[in-house]
Image 1 (tube, helix red, strand yellow):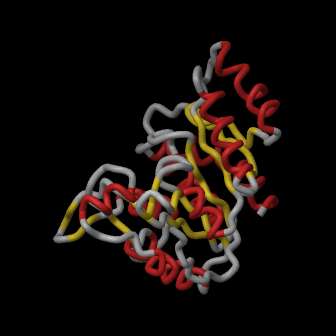
Image 2 (cartoon, rainbow, N blue to C red):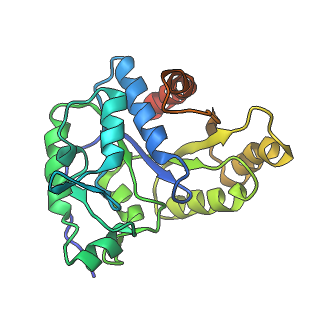
Length: 245
């Protein structure tokens, strides 16, 4: 099935994907947005679709956008930052089908056009990994990235098992014609074991893309001190992404 993709203005920014769920994409995307704004860049966080949204005051709350909005000091309505909110904690295409609703790409495009009039840099967070379905099973996160025309940064685990997941993600993106800026290793231990210490070099050798940064394991990311440690580690990554975009 061929979708007719709505027209979008040219976008500058970065798309953040992960090797799998709960790898830390939201923290990385929100942190990048916050740091870029601290540097004076008119940056905005955007997550087109979120599933698993809780209900409050008669509506569904896209919690990732809510977190990013608070961390980065944004004032946009949540329904603009995440135009499609779904209740069930499933892949968005599946959650939408179960709810009997459609993931409307035009609705996403309306938000993007609106935000593009006020912001110069988009930090876009995907849902899960590249092959997560968004519209049925025929429009994936991979297709979303190509539609937006943004380069990609991959957030990955640091320890044992990350080589295969990370290399497959990078290779799949490259095969689809997507520019991969690099890999961000999250929750990198202060005293890495042999796997965590050797993984970065192996990933770079197998993919040909750089490790953009190694974000530390922070015991309490919700505390002011924890947030500052995390944002300090994000700052050099933000500089690299600005230069590459």
